Length: 158
Image (cartoon, rainbow, N blue to C red):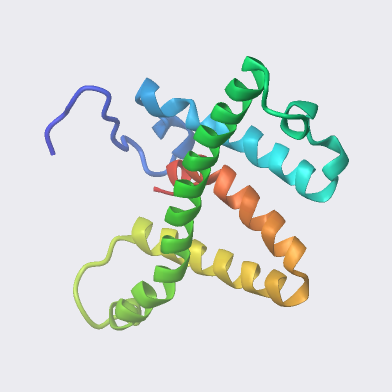
């Protein structure tokens, strides 16, 4: 693969912490903003009395318009992140079932990082389903956290 600007590659698979090389500044903010936004949503979900007053009052001031615009923009990014998380979690059993012959020794070459990624997605799916069966509020909380930290998790796993 050609070396492009802002592209990083794995130099030593045994030392994962040194593989976190340069990243695009355009996407680096996701690893900072989304976890904080997910934590704020979690706080408001469990304790609605902490909802900022600007969202409760009428939308007459410019500050309220700016606050609603920022909330809408970050919520859109969060929803897109949630859709990506849901896709990978729901696709992981299908992927692992398709790779089952290769996992038991028959078949061709298999990428261990890919199997690790989909295996951890499958484990996360099972944990989320168990939380859904136990209490839907815990499921929503866990899914919000997974969605908020998704860019960091994907970067660490892949």
